[in-house]
Every structure is written in structure tokens, then in C-alpha cells.
Length: 188
Length: 188
DNA sequence: CGACGCCTTGATAAATGTCAAACGTCGTGG
DNA sequence: CCACGACGTTTGACATTTATCAAGGCGTCG
Image (tube, each protein chain N blue to C red):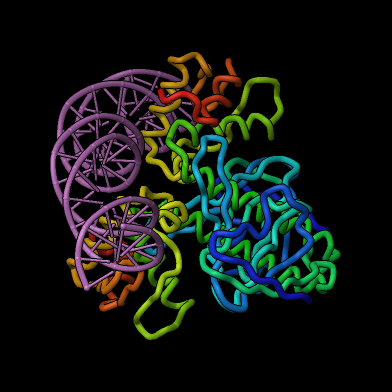
């Protein structure tokens, strides 16, 4: 169990690298990504303080991973983990991937609302979310154009579901409205 | 290790049921599905002869599973599997889920082409695919409207990438063109 | 102050969804 | 044997959503 530090936008591992290590974030934020044949970038997930990433099916990484901000990680040898632990982590990843698929079948505002609620939950900083990632990162995670993400956010602000004191600070003014949006009970 | 048979459109297990068993298809075809809060149906995957399904994160099923045609399965107790086997299966599922996410970020024709190529590979019946599932099933798997799936198929037929001797029989007349489509090198 | 990166906004085009109708196939019953 | 009806599929017209292209604003850091 070793520790390492990375500046912003540094690559921690690349797709194709052997997947021998897991990483636990001490401070900072990380995204995993891959570029499809068509040239589209997919962001598999975002990982925040206290979260674990780097676990992948097979011996090699399919996704690359890059830091978003300056990041300190604990490096954990995969071989040092009991298979029951591995199984648990795999469960978690699988569920994440399945939910991501579901998310990608939603409309733009549903995706954005879902994303915000999830982020708020994971950051648990009382109604206000400080996003580490750029709009483009969010767009590539949600499968939307960056302009659509931006427009959707201002739309949510207009309906006073959220407030945007700064572009990366988001106040969940009305989480219930967001949840309702996710449940699709209202069409606009 | 037991064996069971189901008529078409029978439910094998439901979301929420304890996930104590895996199923190996002897003959037939199965789909796993769930319905989101918004009422959209998502089909997680299709499973064909020889394939294994029913493995899910956690103790309960998240997806339901239904037969598509008459189906015979081998029922396998999860507890009877070595954790290394479980891990392998989980790997496989995880990769499937990740690829599904990628698919859902593609355009309609890319999704359909990808789907056809994958099906052809799994059925390996020499250039011709006999699809067990309905257009609606395909649509709910690809995250498209049924009409879009239908239109895309006739479009592919017009470009003589495929032939449609019957609605559920598809001849891959030009797999290279399909692959090219998937790689996004041509816009229409 | 100025330049750069990121974000937003606007105008327009393209893709996809929705609603509706027609078509084909297949099985049933007259 | 044929007519009918049910169901899945296709096609058409149109509405809506989202992407694309282009410009402008805003904040930060030199």
C-alpha cells in the first residue's frame, strides 16, 4: 500500500495497461474515459475523495484514468485483496455501469438532474455542490453535447430547481423538483 | 443442477427476487429487463443458447428476466460456484454493461449496426441471423423508438448492407459496410 | 490590460420521437 | 377453402429534442 500524487489532468493509467492496481482517492478527483472508434469520448465515471477506482474486467484496463484536480491516491495491489472483497467491488462497478445505461436512455434534463442528485449525495456538503469537473466532462459522461448540458442547467435555474452562484458551484434549491424530473412526471 | 422449461414470454425471475441461481440456456432465448420510474422499459441484454444469465450485483435481482421463445434452462446454484468462477462471470457482465453504455452514446444506425454484428457473431449461422426477439425488444435494448429501429433497418437494406427476407431474418450482405458504420467513417 | 480557457447564448440543422394509418402474416373459425 | 381478426411491422407526416456552428461573455492569470 503505497501513496502517490498527481497534478491536474495527469494520466494515472491508460487503456491497455495491465490492471494490477486499485486506487483509493485521498483527496482530489478522477475521471475514467475511453475514446470510441468514432472518436467520441466516453467518461465512464467520476471518482471523488474516499472512493475507489481502477477495478476493471480482465487483465488490462479498458478505460484510461485522468485526474481532474490535483489528486493524492493510495495505490493498492490487486493481488492483496481477498476475492470476496474483489467480488464486492465488482458488484459495485457493475451496478454503476447498469445505472449508467439506464441514465443514457433518459432525456437531457433527466440525465442532468440525475447527475446533480447523485453528485450531491456523494459530496454531501449540504445542498451545495462544488463540481470538480468541466462541462465537457459532464457532457461526455451524460452522452450530451456540452451546449445541451449548459442550457439544461440554466433551464433548471430558471425553474428555480437549482442556483448557480458560480459555474461549478450548484445549489440544489429544490431537490424534490429534480427528483420529480427524474421520475418523468412532468414534461417540461 | 436442475433443469426447467418455460413457454414463450414467461417470467423466470422478477426484479427484487433473491438472486440465488444462475441459468444456462439449453435452447431458447431470454431477455432481462427493468422498468424505470418514468415507465421506460430497459432491456439489459439478450441471452441465447449456451449462454449464462441471472448473475447480478447484490443479493436481489435488479432486472427481471423473461423468455422470448420457448426455453429450456439449466438452473445452477450460485453457492455451488467457486468465487473465481463468479469473478469471471462478473467480469463478463461488467464488460457487457460498459459496452452497452458506449452503444447508447452512438447514433441510431451505429447502434443497429453494432447490434446486428454482435448478434451475427453470437448466432454464428453464416451470414444470416434469425432474430428471436421483436422490434420492440430491440428498440428497448438500443434505447430507440421501435419506428426508428424499423426505419434504420430498411435504410440499411436500401444501401444493400443487409437483406430482410423476413422481418426476423436478416442477411448480412455487407458486414464491412456495417463495421464501417460503427466506426462512424461515413455520415449516411 | 490582454489573452486564454471555459461557459453561455443564439440561430439553425439534423436526428429521433410521436401519432396515425396501412401492410403483411398467421391462425382461427365459418 | 376463404374470410376475418389479431399482432407485429413498416411507412408517412409531423413535432420535438438535441447537435452543430458561430459568436459573445466572464473570470483568471500572466
